Length: 348
Ligand code: NDP
Ligand code: ZN
Image: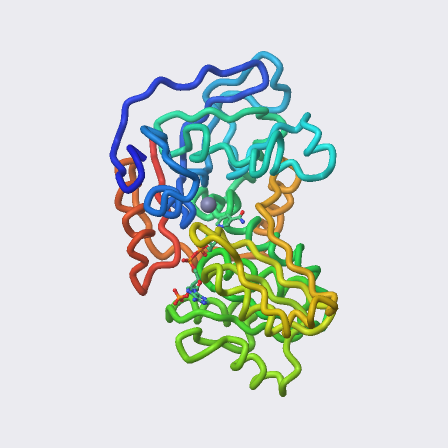
């Protein structure tokens, strides 16, 4: 990111490897919708000559003197969020907000990201995860961000057996929310989106009903499909600040609206007074940045290794070589109809 609205290549020194840190080279990289919010909406503010990217599988090339578990040559999954694990926020259970709101989101936010020949990872033992033997790096790169973010929407929604759940947005994040909702044992999963291959994959992942936000208000369609009852939980993985109004209108008393969408613009989110049951409906609204760390990341990899999640259908555009990152970012920006997720592999 050269500045808001402009990308290009820049030559930079590699950050020094501290005693707890690692330097890695990329094996697979994926541009994210968040990179687009950052560059083209200026959502985190101005950044000059900052390296983008936070979704990577890599190979360790150097470790600090105090790193115990990783060594040069190890293949690793690099989570998008790399917290400071000794912080007070981490001790409270919110490592993603270590040393300040969203403080664990360092790559491509307030530190150089992974779209580089070499990148730096803080607290390697806590933040890196081993790439299981035989796992395809391109598929594993979905464990950096898409799987943990979609699944976090499900965790925050506290999805329980037999519930009816609405997932708004079925890009890669929403698709993983659909899959996670299905794994958690929901009965009915209503999914909102229009891109045909996203719709097809949502059905494969367990969606029972598809709603197009272009066919009228989502809440009206949900009420029609549920005999006026609404759903137990809503997970938001797309839309805008206005989407909350529709989401709240869909949920039953005692329900949860769980947001993982990055609200890159707009001043306020909208909560409708009547449908929020005049403030007394026990309808919770929660939003969260993905949790990370070695333990969680290796668990998600374990799900993939055992065939519980198959992300292969999401990787619609595959490239080879670091230079292709630029094309990947442009694709993410333009979102052609057949795109779900671009991924770039690098062979040495
Ligand atoms: P995509 O752009 O690929 O998908 C967005 C989805 O929302 C699509 O299905 C789209 O439909 C749908 N949509 C668009 N407009 C509306 C609307 N008005 N009402 C309802 N649905 C709508 O995004 P990603 O899946 O890549 O990412 C989703 C969000 O998650 C992004 O904001 C991203 O920045 C954020 N994110 C958050 C993270 C976290 O930790 N919380 C981490 C990573 C990403 P259509 O099929 O028509 O395109
Ligand atoms: Zn991302």
